[in-house]
Length: 398
Image (cartoon, rainbow, N blue to C red; front, side):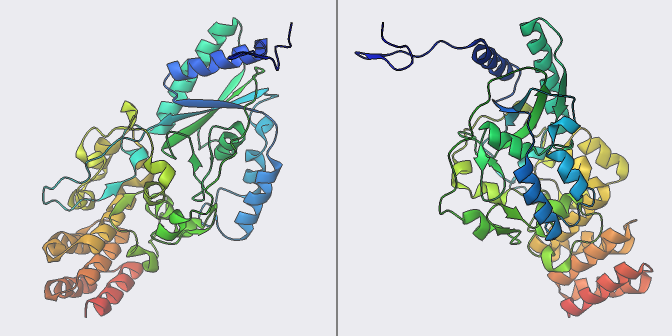
């Protein structure tokens, strides 16, 4: 009989039978899909030394400035899975695809900001672990014995994009996002470290070719080279992680973004071809979760902020960050009709950070009403940083 590994008889191609390891891997991936994980792939639990070299160089070059917790030591640990779990045998890279068509901002006359798509529904830090725990239980039922595991999302110490790339779940785009076939980069990643011997997948032999549209279209020029993000310039960093003032030279480039930024994904040809199959958990429950009223963000109390955004990733920015970002957005898209709410914020907001950014927005809009409001704010303000913001805004408004 002709060898099953290579024989071709007529139109029939014979393949070798699946090994027990391959069969188990297929069943695990099927379970992942059954439990709401859109995509999955396997890699070994060996270390990522080449990734550590890149991360160390990025840290040394200042590209990670502002992420004070991401030290060289942290990077080294992130590249060694065995620091997270004793002797894992495999890593199952999983993802939830979330892109869906969007009609955009409502035409209701309300000045609105923009929230990144991934943060409009439930917090992915809750969704992914829930589904991975359910998958793990199903895997234990499948094999018939306890399986040691560790569930990870991006807040744990693992290089999740490197795991996804080595597993062949997707490949690195020049915007440093993982591009998943059929879904683009609209995929939230997670990992299961497992004491289970699964068949590793091969990395995908794909790249961006000559395309560099994401570099060209980044509003702040944060993609300083292919695959290299200068974090301090990134809109996502400034609107989410930045706790102090947003650098003045960046504010005009933030547009109407108040949490995150999707520009480098929106312009990517692969991402524009993503399947319109949004996961329901990522869909906004109301317009404020996707396109919030900038006036409301400026005025909301701590209690209102928590009620509106509890259980979403937006909580990461905190009330102060969202109000600050709303002021900047109004400075970018606002008109004289927006002088009154900005005046109220510049004169009476309880946070000096917000008062200073509201003053900046008034200076951007300009006009006699804005100048009068800034003059009043300067007389009243006692915080040194906010006073400096007002002085600079008065110069611009003049």
